[in-house]
Length: 125
Image (cartoon, rainbow, N blue to C red; front, side, top):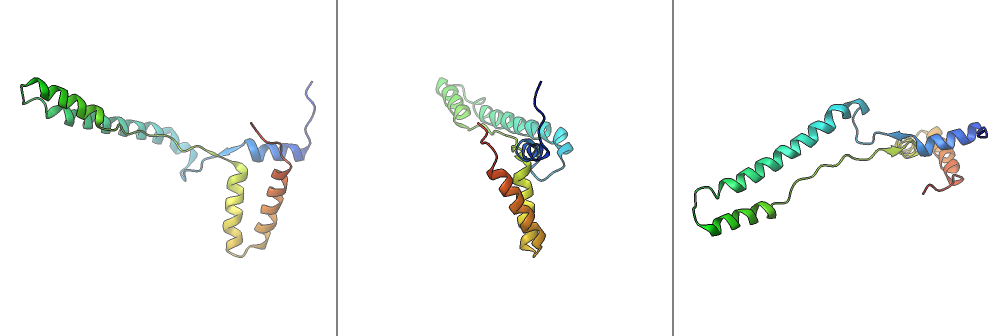
């Protein structure tokens, strides 16, 4: 049987393990946005390859085929990668920093509490 965690341990685990969308959009928007971005990049790559290949259709000599192949390989394929989500502690500290910049003294205290909890946290590997 696993031992019970104290509320302080639960809070620390929440700060380190819970993730938040850092991209700046609603987390539900990723359901449509991620596939849309991937398909947009794929269309772009297909179009670039088609443009490179279309130049070689009019010439009949063999060197043109090698030239077209070289152009297709030389064109760097566009890639897309999702921005990773960040731990809850990172987002809380960011928000508290913005609030304290506006002059909210309570934000400074809360940020310091979060930092002190994280100092005592074991490092994740």
